[in-house]
Length: 78
Image (cartoon, rainbow, N blue to C red; front, side, top):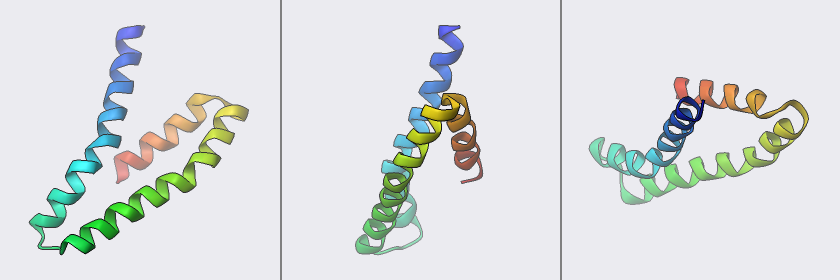
């Protein structure tokens, strides 16, 4: 059980942390300016920050699975 759950959490953590590297590399690849890359990163962090409270509320009232599944679906489509 720990092996499968741990692997899932590891993959989710990798996806969340990958944007710190992938956004700047992708922006540089397509020729964005450094300020544009910073704006993209800042917007991504702002969206994440605004979703902390609703995600916590959902986890408190409906359980972690109810928050994790939509999160993973959004990561998948993103």
